[in-house]
Amino acid sequence: MARLRHRTISKRTVDALAVGGRDAVFWDHRLPGFGVRVYPSGAKV
Image 1: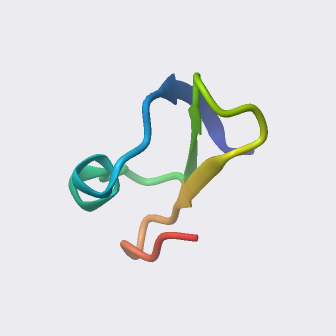
Image 2: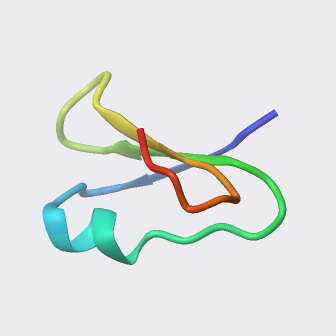
């Protein structure tokens, strides 16, 4: 299961996101339902 985190998502934030051995989901705290999933391979969706 992915770990969930909240922060403001911008281009700079997405470029800097990295995870360890598990995928993680980062949700924007200002825009409900908008998030980025980051996989251990570095892929971002």
